[in-house]
Image (cartoon, rainbow over all chains, first blue to last red; front, top):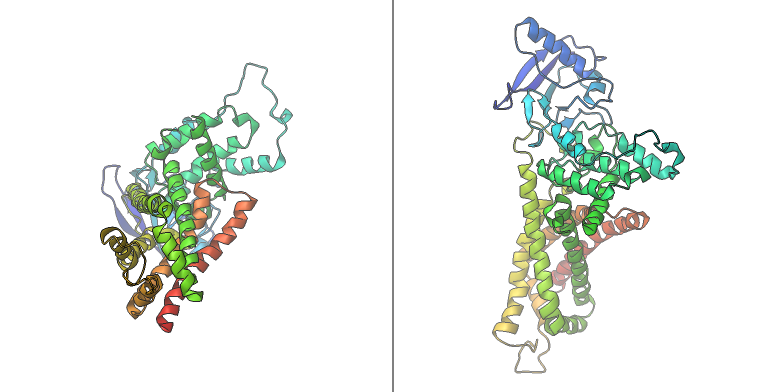
Length: 248
Length: 228
């Protein structure tokens, strides 16, 4: 396959940045998207040019590192996969492909396609945890009865890998799907009840402080989420937040 | 509790409550207007009651005005905050692939509805306020000196829909209102955190409401245009 890549190049956080065209040839349809970028970077290195910086780690859709906005969509044209799981057979020979970083004030560009997503870490630190006694007499989690439906929903929420595709896809750069998944995975389980009030209040406050936008329920986040996190989590978080606000 | 309306969720909650309130008002407005198609006399009687009963005029009307102003102002505040969350735009976006046109253009449809309300107030509300509270005529009669002249409301309504352009503007505005409601009604349930089997049923009703009520208003305008 021969392709024209239009890639966002930005030397540093303070650089203005611009789209740069790169023709690539001899790309196999069976390559992953990141392998195609590896080919480009090898060519750039051999020419003595600066390779394109992009986040990646596990390359099997688990870590949430890869964060590419490809042809106007987070993680590219397919749904429920990450950019590393996207293959070149999803594109046509001769196609022009736009590759951009996540765009959000809360996710500033570090270099090229790599963004600073530590805002998500700070939201997690604000309440995305439970306190467990680890002094040696910890209760076995399996000894606590949990309704199957709730256990399934909690597990589904917990599959969020924190990649930030929800923020990138949302026209308002809202992080509600991510935060609601993290709130829900604990709100649905008995272990999460002790800190439930503080958790949702603190995580939403941190989310607002980071500068993410408001949710307008377009549903774009749910469509583009590689793990299929449901909008129902946002409704649940709204309930949890309004209830917690009344409690104080 | 104090900080709830300073949060993103709190602001959306307030937006949803004001929207649900306005939708109740819209249904009530439609219920009265449709009377003009079936019984001009009944339409006149109900209009006179609505226009002169003190609870409606001095209690509910100010609440309604507050609700309308709040909904529009909060809509613009939220839009400003949302646009501030992404200052550098994407070079290429494919938003139609993951969301509906109406969900992405609530500000546009809202702005059209706001402009329509300016015309609607010019047509009906300002003349009513002028007659009742500036001229001091609370009789509701076509000729306040002639008790047999009948109420003016139906005649006023028909007179406005003689103009084809006005009818066309009303129709286009109500199409935009329908698109606004098709997203907004469902979205309000999400914003207040409601999501159970009853709400899923209500969401079905919301589609009927979002299409049926604006279509009904268009029907009323066309009816008077063609029957006047």
